Structures are given as C-alpha cells and as structure tokens.
Length: 190
Image (cartoon, rainbow, N blue to C red; front, side, top):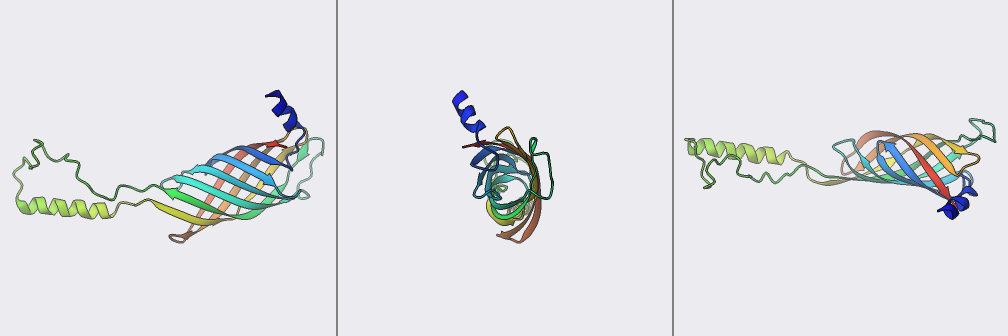
C-alpha cells in the first residue's frame, strides 16, 4: 500500500488517471484522464435521482482554463473547465402489466365474495386495465451534456476536488432538458 501511495505522490493532478467519487446529481464513481496539460476526458458511472431515478453513464471532453483564477503555485491551481459530452440513463419504470395479485379476492377461490353485479366487476377490470396503461416501461434516455465547473488541483498531492453544473439536452427517446450539479474528488495515479 505504501508503494502505491509513493508512486502516486509523484503524480500531479494534471497528468495521468484520476479515480474518485461524485456526489449530488448524479452520485457514484468518477474518473478522469488527462490527454494534454489543458484537456481531459472524464466519465462517471452513477445513480441519477432526477426523473424517477436510474443508472447513468456519462463521458465528457473537457477544456481547462488555468489563467482565469490565479493562486499561489505552492498551494495549487484552480482551473475553470467546460466541455461537451454524452450521457445514457437507464430508467426502470413502473410495472405496466397491471397483473392482478388477488388482493380483492376474499376467499382465495378466484371468485369475488361481495355481491357485485357482473357489470360492476367489468367496470373495475376496465379501470384496472386503463390504470395499467399509465405505468411506465423501462427506457433508455440519451442526451448531450454541457459541463461547466471549477476544480482545485493540490500542488503537493495528487488530488483534485471539483464542483460542476451540467445542463443536459436529452435527444432520445424524447427531447427534454435537465440540469445536474455535483461535487467530487479524485486521486491521481501515474
């Protein structure tokens, strides 16, 4: 374990691969790979709580501006970043089958024990069928992300902390708009 820490201690937060977590909308595991000193790819596998929740994967190409916010270099650097990316959200819907679980049958014989007429039972069945049509099926949502954030890269440790907001334009199966906001941290490896 000490050898991993020693190897990582030589890494700077603007190079190599970083792994950590993200909390907010969404919440999960976050990774970042620097491709140049100013550009990086980031990705997350996370749970999204918006719109009835669902598992989300996203990836972004980020551009970092180190000149906008100046800090003492001995402390660290604070880039503002922006980019574009994609997200896929797997939403689990309500059960649209409308299957009767037998709760309205009192004696377990399959027959209703009340004195309802056949018409009344038929009306209840039709209402149950109509309410089942309103259930949501599982669906996959695909969208375009436009992340904007600020990060702090420690000068003497391979650690990054960040906060971001990401407007999202969903394009499939329907066009929709969402905004995510989260904070997170990553540890960098050489």
